Length: 374
Image 1 (cartoon, one colour):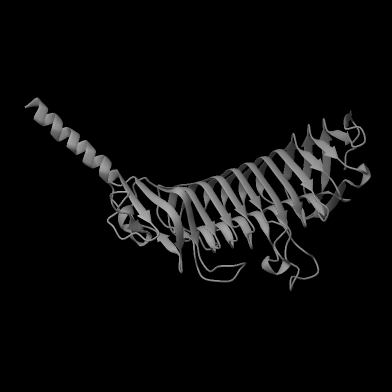
Image 2 (tube, one colour):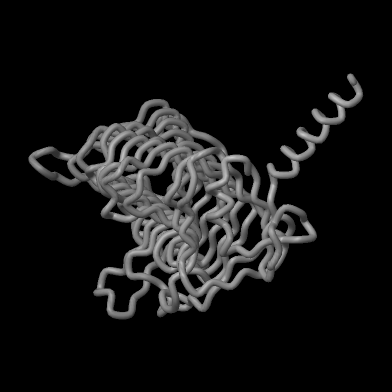
């Protein structure tokens, strides 16, 4: 009798494990409940609605899209992950072509190990209440914006983590966060590169590595490199744009830590947000940079930062009070480091606490070399 009960329990556990994971392939026609009988990607929402399924495995292959895939059904925790080389692709190219990518419209979902090549988006958040979404180990090339939050979002969108993202050669932004309500968004351990190899006509006028707008709150950017954001010049006006990180004025609660930004056409960092933390920021500028940092309207403190200034007026304080703490500056002419501007009746100021000048000739540190720019 005990053996019989044990067998029943074993079979129950085996069936539970069996139902816990399903498989999908680019040409699948099966039921998905065995790796040798994969279902099709069009069956995804049916699996998402089944609370017994915790893992959806995409088998290696090329998945062609001619429209967005709406990820919408169910609410239980589920992980969608690639097995091997999983590529989502479409006819999208440099701002033109069909709609493609995943629209995230359900909570408690994770995505892992998927490539998006020639798609409009990787992940797009529209006006759907969504929370607890993890995006890990994603590679993207030639997208409009890999991760995009629509400007019209008014539903609650929160607790979104983006980790180990590599996005290259985007048309508009690597990551674009917008809307009235998105909050608690974390971007970590990622590489965002606009690639100078992109021809001018394939770039948006206002290309950015990370763009944060609307009334979004509590954004964390940490351990991220951002490079080569040079905007298009065709029909874009006389002032060529392109920034590494842009944060606009209605945003609050932004942390930028251990971030390296280089080769932006206008500024490596263009920050207007309230309650902004800057720590261990490295701004390397580039041959065509105008500014390393443009800081607007608020009080800013940059701790343990490194600024390589290639142009005069590398740091702009526009109606803001800026303080650099224990920071290092590589400059050829310190008298041209600061550009102080009045805005809204407040005169910009820049001060230094414990700052050091890097002597380029012998690479030694010289204390007290940088004067206050007040």
